[in-house]
Image (tube, rainbow, N blue to C red; front, side, top):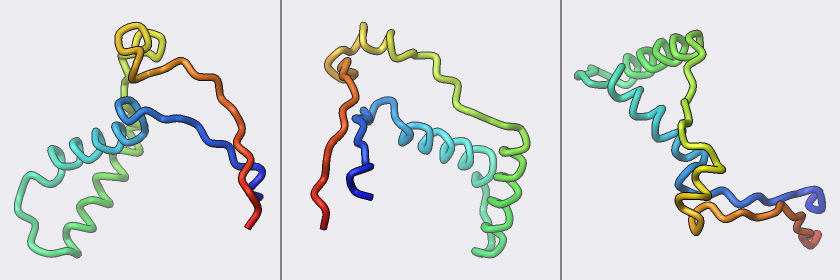
Length: 90
């Protein structure tokens, strides 16, 4: 199993982490900008918000393409070729 692992460099300035931060920001603005009485109500409110957001098929609109990022910020978005890394079996 460990021989099938493949690692990919993911810059922190354009990764899944940014998408998570964006979603938390939207959640905060659309759902959490008010006082919520208890954890159960909070959980229900978030579940409703999540269901609505998923039904809208909301997504992150990346305006900055990889090619453009490499032109503007080459040291942060290096042009690297994917490579496989063999890990030892434990």
